[in-house]
Image 1: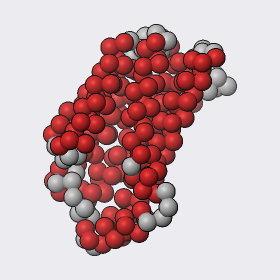
Image 2 (image 1 turned 120 degrees about the vertical axis):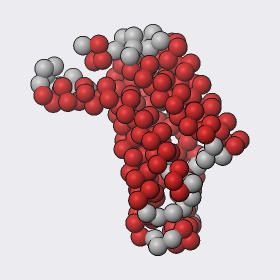
Image 3 (image 1 turned 45 degrees about the vertical axis):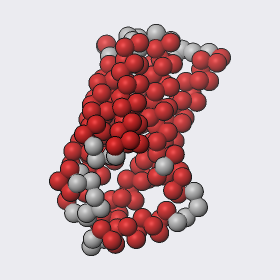
Length: 217
C-alpha cells in the first residue's frame, strides 16, 4: 500500500511502488516455487535444506501476498457505502489469513531446524496443534481463507472496473483448480502446480489494471 503522506517522487515512494508492483508477480511465483522445492523430498516431513528452502520461499511469498492485498485495496479507492465495506471486509479476511499462513510457516521452519527426522517434526506439530484453536486458525480454515478472500476481492475489483473481468476469472480458475487438486487428488499432484500457475497469471493480470495509477505511472 502506498501512503498518501509520502511525497510522490521520494525514494521511499518509489521503493514502495516497486514492491507493490513486484508483489503481483513475486508472491504467486514464490507460492509455486516453494511447492517445486518440496519435490525432491516428495512433500514429506523431511528436515533439511529442501524443507527449509521451500518454507522460507513460501514465507516470503505470503508476505508479498499481504503487500498485494493492500495494493488491491488501494486500487479499489475511492469507494463508499456497501462497496467500501465489502472491500475492507475482503481485505481484512485476506490479511488475517496471511498472518495465519505466516505463523504456520514460522512453525514449520522452527520444526525443521529443531528436529532430527520426520517423527520428531510430527511430534512438534502434534504439540503445537494441541493448543486450542491452533489447528483451526493456523492450519485449516484460517490458512485457506486467503484464497476465498482473494477471489472475492478480485470479483469486487472487476465490478468496480478497477481490473478486467478476465483477471478476476483467471484468479477464480486458479483458486478452483487448487481446491480441486488439494481436496481431490492431494497436494503433491501436478494439478496443484497447474492451479498455482493459473493463480500466478491471474495475479499478474490483476496488477495490470485497468485503473492502477501506481502501475501505469
